[in-house]
Length: 448
Figure 1: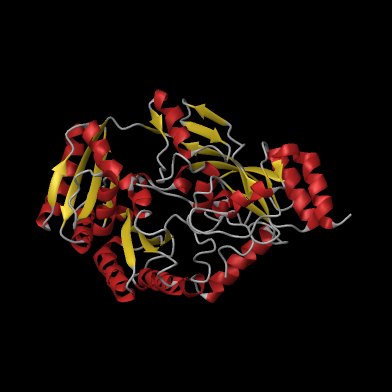
Figure 2: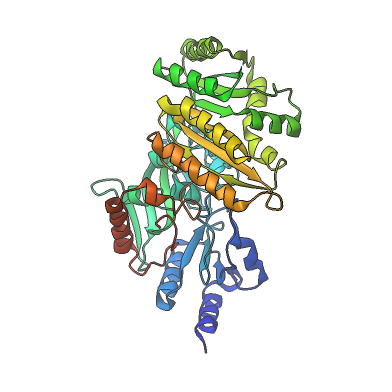
C-alpha cells in the first residue's frame, strides 16, 4: 500500500465522512483573493482531540497542514500547497458565555458576530468587528489579528485574548493564559504557522449607552486624511472612523442608489459612550475639523439613519466586484500623521500605472485598504503585482507596515525582504523552527 492510500485509510478511520477525499476538495483551494492547488485531503474536526489525532497523523507521514476558517481571508493564508491537508474548523463551534466574568470561551469555528449577538442580552459585546464578521471565524481572526471599524478606540483581536488553547507540532494540547512568557501572544497573527488554535477565552465589554454618527463629503481624499489627522491630534477618540475614496463612492452608489455624492471622498464617524454630552461634543469636534477642510457634513438623526450611512461602508467590497472581476486587496498601515501624503501618493501611482485603485479602510487607525481592480483579459497581471509592490513601498517609506489585519500569507510574502531586516527574519525563522521543527504548519506562508 502506498503512502497516499495509507493516509486515506487512516483519515477515513479517524474522521469518517468528515475526511473529504473526492472532488469536493476543490472548494477548499480558495480564499477571498487567491487560489491554490487542490489539497490532498480536507478534514473537518469536531474536537481538540481530533485535531491532536490529525497532527500526529500528519507528523507520521510528513504532510503539511493548512488551517482554514471561513475562507474569507485576503492574503492567501488559507490557500493550500501541493500535497497539503486542509484543516477546516467550521465544525468546532462551541461557545460558552460567562456574563459575570465578562468573558466568553469559543472554539475556532465560532463566527465573530455570534459572540456579540449572544452577549447582547447581558448588556455586553465583543468589540473586534472585521467587515466579514458575519462569516469570519474567531480562529481566523486570531490567526490574522483582525481588526475592524471599532479598532481605533477598542483595539484588535489580540487585545481581547485572555487564554488560548492550541495543539503543537507534536500533537500535544496546551491551554495557556498570558502570564510570564506570552506564548499565546506569539501565536496571535502567526497565520497558523506555529500551532493550531482549538479554543480561546476572550474579554467582553459593556455596551455603550449612546452613539452618534456623521458622514462628511470631501472634495478629495487627501483633505479627508488631513481632517482625520488633525481631529485625532486634537484629542478625538471616535469608536469608528472609516473612509471611502471617490472610486468606492461611485461603486456603492451604482450598487445601492443611496444618493451618495459622486466624485467625493466620504468619511464616516461614530462616537460612543455613557455620557451623551461627551458623545455629542466629540462628534462636534470631528464635524468642525471636517468643515474646516471643505467638507459637507450630515449628522444621522437616529439609529435608523445611522445604520443607513454605515450600510455604504459595508457595501464597498461587493460594489467593487461590479467594476472589475478581480482585485488585489492591499492592507497597509501607516502613522496617522502621514495619511495625507500616503493616500495622495497611492492615487498618483494608480494614474501612472493606468489601473483602477479604490482606497477605503479604518483610517483612524492608519489602516488603509487600497484595492487594485483589474480584468485579466484586458489588463496585465504582472503590472498589477508591480503596482501592489509599489503601494507596499509607499507604506514602508512613510514608516508603515505591510499589513494591519489581513496578514502576509502568500500575497505579501516576498515583500517581507524589504519590510524586515535580515536579522529579524532569522529570528522569525528560529521561532518557526523551534515550534514547528518539521515545518508542517502552513508552510511557505509569511516568511520568504
